Length: 155
Image (spheres, rainbow, N blue to C red):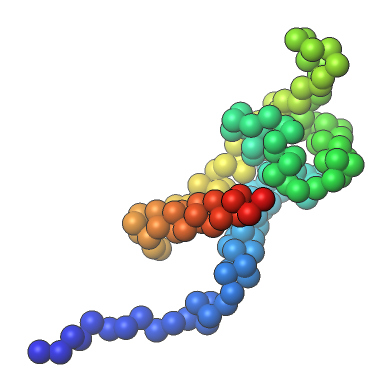
């Protein structure tokens, strides 16, 4: 008896280089987040602002680490934080433990934008789960985590 399991037909996207796939996949999340934010009046978040707001909302990393992960100059990072403060997403305060340092936290507006961003991300995650299933999504996450690990080893 011969094996009659159909071989999946490769789609044109399966022939695309991994960096291009990652860029387009990132765009799917970014576009959904930007649309959700705009619909709620948060359409003035600058480039890289979504990352800063989202990361601060998680509360797991200091601003310095978040900025390093963006891989931008100190000047660009300062301008980004300044813009987010001026637009009401972040608040800067003198650190009560060390008056030479400033702390940056989300304002109420910043937290609302982070919540909107998270909801949009969860919507894309849900669509991906529905399309691919939990096991394949887990494998994709494992592959991406390994890719990040490879990058960190090279630094």
